[in-house]
Amino acid sequence: MRTTTKTIERPDVREDNATSDDTPKFFHYVKKDQIVESAVSGRMVVALCGETFPVTKQAKPGSPVCPDCERIFKGMRKK
Image (cartoon, rainbow, N blue to C red; front, side, top):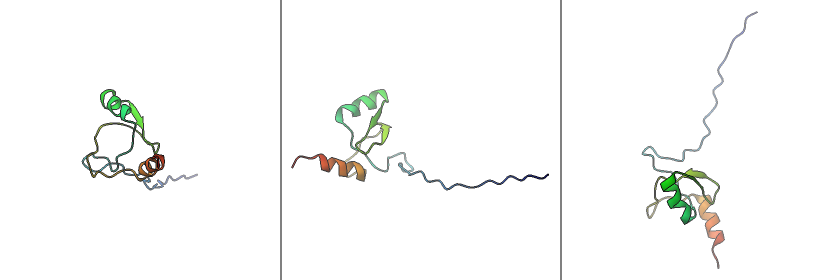
């Protein structure tokens, strides 16, 4: 009896959230008090969109914002 083994390639469907220089693709909305705590302790924060990550970079004016976070944030504003 002869058996063969084949490798089935699976496409990589992970979303690229960082650029080549370790800058996040998008910046997320996070509660202010959690930003400093995460930057100091390395604890994970939860963005409005549900993404969890440790704070390692600070957004600069004009940085790309996560579309889901932005939509949720705008929906929270008082009219």
